[in-house]
Image (tube, rainbow, N blue to C red; front, top):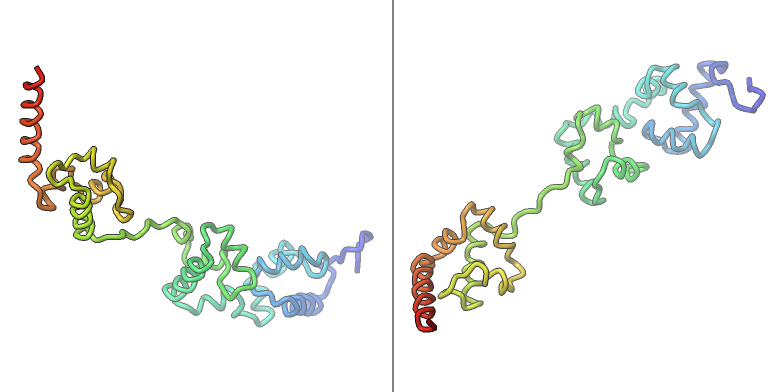
Length: 220
């Protein structure tokens, strides 16, 4: 039976007719999730009932899948994997596709052998941590970082000066992070860093102060 505007009144269809129609649509388009179903329905209006009708008629998408004998589709399929195995697949997909948001995941997962976002939420709950930007791994260990700092000071011929201000201005190493980053990472101030890498910062500082004082007296 059809309404005057040509749309099918799905509630007037028999259960068998509904199941056959939906099943044919799913098989034709290779649908594996409710999201894919909605997408294909938007491309083929009035071909099958809406998700609203399905939820009213069958209770949920999963219940519809059971009625069709397709329990392994989407959620049922991924439910057989352990959470660890599921996350391994999803994290690999996110990394390869360089996905940074749930919205992009939903778009890229369409047609792929990957659990939908709704399935992920059912299995693991909060999916937001999967899309948080992770800090880059340190390029150096602490020992390598301090060694590179020492080598750069020697390359710049600052071992008899050790001025942090001069170092900031002259540093050329593309490997070293900023001075502030080094101090934050090692939890040491500049003087402590210099001592750590083998320089007598205090002795050099005292010598510079005396030398500056001597130079000042000569000019007076």
